[in-house]
Length: 265
Ligand code: THG
Image (cartoon, rainbow, N blue to C red; front, side, top):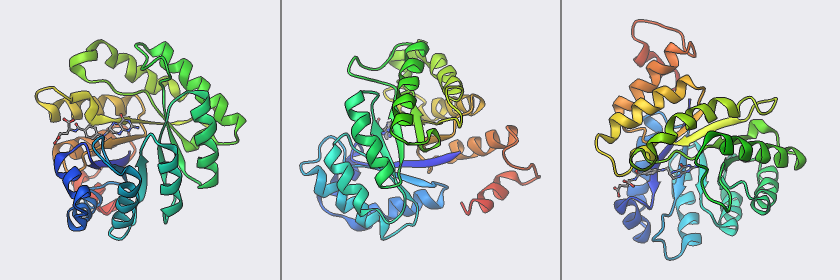
């Protein structure tokens, strides 16, 4: 599982404060803790309250790159912020994200090519987030078709079915699992898949229990990557056990410790 740490997000009040006050130490420690806990990449988002989102994103990129070596996922809906951010990256990044709208795809696909970045593509368009699996698949097929015509390999694309909160869309969750499985059948080579895991429990009780249970199920449906909280230890242990059961790592008596060591977690 390719783990993208979610914690450097202005959606969290303390992160929004750290960004506004240019509190480098706070952001760098969040970066280091997530990488030590197993994140292979870090998602960076200034959040909805940012007054100068471009300056804030460039500042985040610089301070995070000064403290850890992992790839960065630039989480912004603004094209100019994405491009300025990509220019600053010291290693290959992740564009988070484009929708399935043709004009957005035609803007973001060339950026992915130019900066050698992976591209997260959400299966939503101007009509909104799909309510069922078939519409998610239809949009995924469209994304892959446009990607192919723009010369980007499906293996550089992470399809995101958009995980919805359980308290508003309980009846969609199984369809989302099926979409994760079926996305992989749409092209050869197959696209990758990703979800923003914590979305599922926004506004719910027992958030961590819901997060880790969904993650386990999504692993069974072939999920490749998740934006999640790597500091949630029960979640990470459950993830490791899931990888073991799917035969992605070799069993040994102390498998959690062995996995952490092999990934230098
Ligand atoms: N897909 C893609 N990118 C994404 C998402 C996605 N980026 C953002 C988000 N979804 C994933 N990251 C988070 C980060 C935090 C939370 C959820 C998803 C979260 N935050 C607390 C909340 O809203 O309750 C904040 C609590 C606080 O203020 O302290 O749950 O789906 N491609």
